[in-house]
Image 1 (cartoon, rainbow, N blue to C red):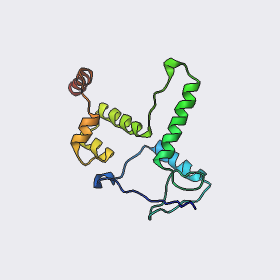
Image 2 (tube, helix red, strand yellow):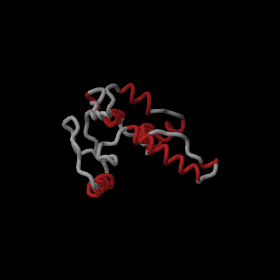
Image 3 (cartoon, rainbow, N blue to C red):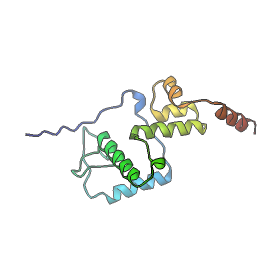
Image 4 (spheres, rainbow, N blue to C red):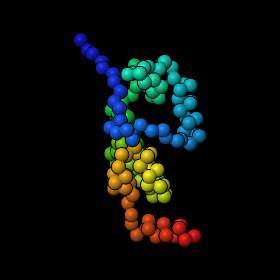
Length: 145
């Protein structure tokens, strides 16, 4: 007999509970996803409104996204030359890339800490605020302009 246990894990720290702003384009994409959904929503541990559901109508899990990204990379790499191959990445690496890009564009470190849901600024700065000669030169030019 198979049992399926569905539960929602809470964030590791209270900083993981936050509201994140989004662009109007992102918002409209989510509206379209909800409008096109064929299956009704599900309630898990009192939570509803899951954005992506699997074919059984259950919320997708991290494993679903990791498998999807692996499949997309495999498909892309089959049709592109060795020099154009994509590396093996995970959905979590998208989070790192986004935050590194925001840090490089000058997002305030405390704002970046909030967006990431980090309890400690040291973690945010250690992972995402990488300095180099080029980044420091660009920052100096931006500040004196």
